[in-house]
Image (cartoon, rainbow, N blue to C red; front, side, top):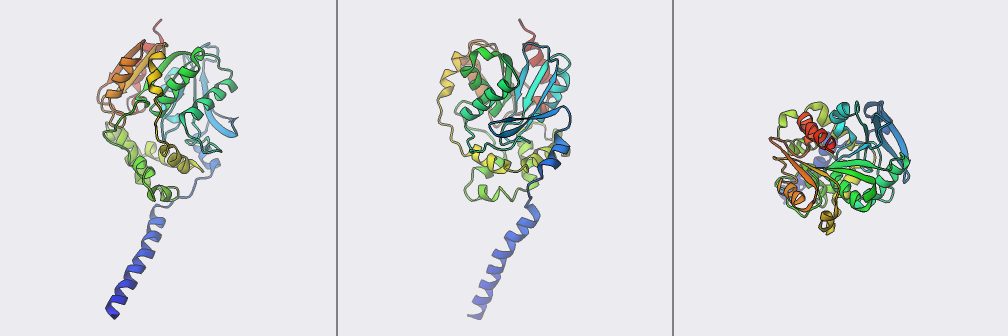
Length: 316
């Protein structure tokens, strides 16, 4: 009997100690917004209030251009994912990009509504605030979904459309980032809001890259640290908890704007089959498939992907 009691005490101690050890090793507090701004919001970053959110954005380049280029990032990312593109494009064009609510430095939606419809409404209000009446709009993954849905609802505002490994069709991933799996798992997703192992961020970025060697410490740290902006971890969970039951993709053939479908042939999150569905449904499209490239071509292979985009926007 004494042995049983001793064993139970040991088990009880382990149950108490293990969570403490995990918290010490992997528990991270939110990083103060001013510290994040100092590192990730240097010039030409600006902030503007939209729907009660202090939105982080960058508006660069030739402001005399009548048609600015608006670029929207994907889930768990930030406007920085287009840094390499912006460096080249700003010499010729006006480039506008923002941190979507729930990601980067912008902060979360006060009402916790992360539906595509709410993001479309946000983008419209944001562009109105900047005085944009017409644009070339595009995005990656979630950002691509928002871009084509925005085009359907604001047809007269869009000159051309860019879809980079965009979501929107019912599909099954061949591989899913670890952070996505955790955020969709009961119990674990609640722990994720305060226990967020750093290796989860790196593993998740590597998952969407074809060439894992391109995931530098600086890149992985950026994704990780911006996740620790107050409210972003909960927003990440809230966004992924939304079940996509919309059949809005059936309206894609109504998009008449010239559209570039830019896809990595090694995208395991949103496989190439989805690019071919866009190609089949969009009446005025160009499909460019990049070899040995994953889910974020503008980040993993910025030079080649940008060449395809510039050729597209220069077409009459």
